[in-house]
Length: 327
Ligand code: AQP
Image (cartoon, rainbow, N blue to C red; front, side, top):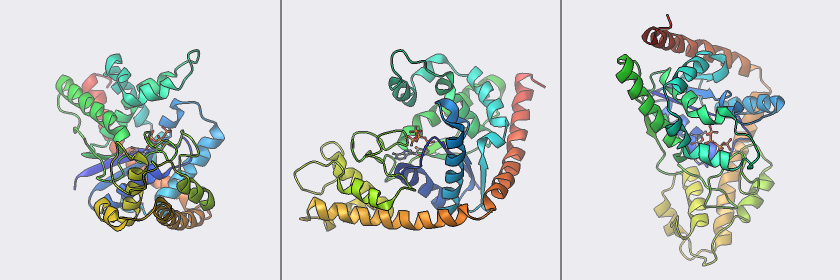
C-alpha cells in the first residue's frame, strides 16, 4: 500500500479552504492509502501565537479531523510536537538547504511582505520548508495531498530528498504532491484574487466553527462582478468561479453541470444555493465537533497516534544519523 502524509497548522480558526483543499481530500484517501495525518503545531510557532490560543486551535483541529470522518484505526493521527524526530530531522534538512532556495518560496515572501519595514522576520518562517521536508521524509510518504499554495514546498522537499540521497546514498523516498481537481485554491470571498486563509480578512473567510448566520451573510455579500452571468472564468469572474468551486466541491456536481443548471438564474438565487450547501455541511460538522469535544477520546487518540508515528520516525532518523555520522 502506498503511503500518504499531510498536516494542517493550528494557527487560527480552520477555514473552508482547509476543509475543501485538504481535509475532505484526506477522508477520500483513507481507504486507499496508508495515511499519516498530523497537527503541525511546531509550524504554528513560526509566527507569534498566544499559548492559550494554540492549545484551543489544536483541540479544535483534532476534533474537526475526527468529526469529518478520519478514522484513527485506519489513519495515524498525531501531533507533530509529540514526535521529537520532526525537529531533529528538520535541523538536518535546514543544514542541507540553501538560503537562496528558501528565500524563493512564495509563502515566505507573502508572509514576510506583511511584516512592516521595521518589524523583524522570525527565522522560523524562513526555515519552515526544511521542517516541512522533515515531516514528509520521516515517514517515507509517496504522496502529499495539498492545496496549490503548498505545492512549492513539496517540490522543495523533493529537491532536498534527491540532494541528500545523492550525497549520502539512497535514504529517502522522493514524494509527489497531489492537488485536488476542484478546490485546490478556495479564494477569499471579499477579495477573490487571493486565497482564503486563516490569517486573512474575517469578512472574506468562512470559518468552519463560526455562527452559520454569519457564514450565510458572508456568502450573500461576497464580491462578484455585475454582469449577472454564471460562468466559470477565473480571470474575468473570480468571485463567481470561486462560488462555483465551493458548490461543486460540496455537492460533488461538476462545474460544467452547475453552470448549465444556473443558466438565466440571477446571482442572488445562486448565492443562496451556495449558502444553503455550505451551512448544511458546516451545521452537520459543528454538531459532530461538539459531541467529540465533550467526550474524553481526544487525548487517548493523540497518545496512541504519537506512539505509532514515533515507531517510523525513530527508525528513519537513526538511519539518517548513521549516514551523516552522528552515531
Ligand atoms: N484557500 C485554500 N484553498 C485550498 N486549500 C487550502 N489550504 C489552505 N488554504 C486553502 C490547504 O490546507 C492545508 C493546510 O494548510 P495550513 O494551515 O497548514 O497552511 P496554509 O496553507 O498556510 O493555510 P492558511 O489557512 O493560509 O494558514 P495561515 O493563514 O496560518 O498561513 C494545506 O494542504 C493547504 O494547501
